[in-house]
Length: 340
Length: 198
View (tube, rainbow over the protein chains, first blue to last red):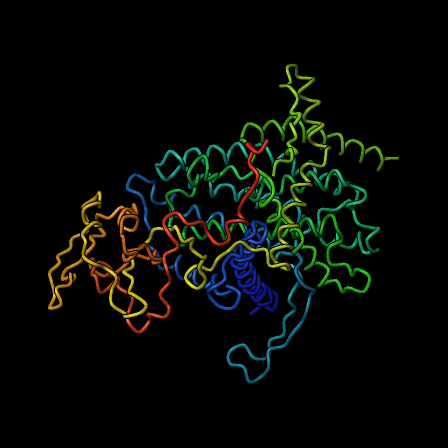
């Protein structure tokens, strides 16, 4: 077998296992953090500190009946959750997760003994990482859109209408806000972004592009359906939006996708704006990036506990009339500064 | 108690009429630190819950809140502390006053020509827990206890006289009824000033 393919397959398996486990762990973290912020204690009984709650939830989701409504479009209804989960994982394929390493399979191992392989730092070593991630995460919105329209339920239709509204609003901001840092670094590769910020805290792009950072965070919250822009499945208004008719693991796949997207957005924010895995003083790089990703993940939970939702019309108004002009002005000013 | 309360009227401002006023309000709301006050409040509560034990959670089946004495749960039949005999004298007042007709009792004279209770049941499917029976009882024999967990496999689980009667071996633990409408022992702590205080 070609060593590169073997390395890539190993990487894919690792990323799939780790990120889906982290997505499950993310639900636990979210419940715990939200509980503490609301003076509760959250899951506490299953296992130590409630840690095995993830297992209990997983068993529940897997053994639940998989209901497909009578008038639903069966095929689309069945593949829509897979779209969300798959695109969330595909987006991670362009992320440099850990350094490149080589290994040789020992001789006693059957079938593949003697093969040596180099595992690349990204699964797909492409030089347009950011564009790829934005594109794939954007296409992830097909999941809620198709799910809502396929399920023959008015709440689902409303949810998918809101998906379209939200998608049309934030995607402009994501692109425009990232344009300014891309102009500064002159590359679309996340590795180049990381290498441009290796000079400690002072060299972070955050200090040169604070406006772009805030815009990207806002758009990222909208992209992952996090709370201030949680319109797709706003329980108080449209029951559960696009997920109304889903049950069991199909429902669970939407949420694995959502949490994987949260992790991806956290990784992107850490790599693009706050120095990525460059060592930070005495902190080695791999701990630094884990800390940064954890902070951005925590920020999403924190904001969910603190701030109310917006209405869909407010989101459109906010994105098109406030954020887009700011983003365009930011890009223009950056362009002028880069030219001078 | 009579000191004047410090209520603050919020200056909410008027509704913005022109687009320019609306724009100014948006800018003001954006750049004031209100959003960050929200973030501060939640993180403060998180640290209080985590490190100062300010959680409001009661792990219910394992921990229970204390019940005020005026709480009206499943009835208890008390015994006389001196002799251990049940207090009920078979007067039938509780049966008479019961507005949902759920108490049924039969009495007879025993060998000492004393009234004894031969049958006593409360139909908890009908009982509305109004507390009249406990209020009318001249001997403080029927009182409301603290057993509020009333799910059971049998409809009759709670309703017989023997079920409600204090077990003879636990006579020492029998608590006296504080009286109908008695305040909680910790009532002073719960007193708060209301807007009527001034």
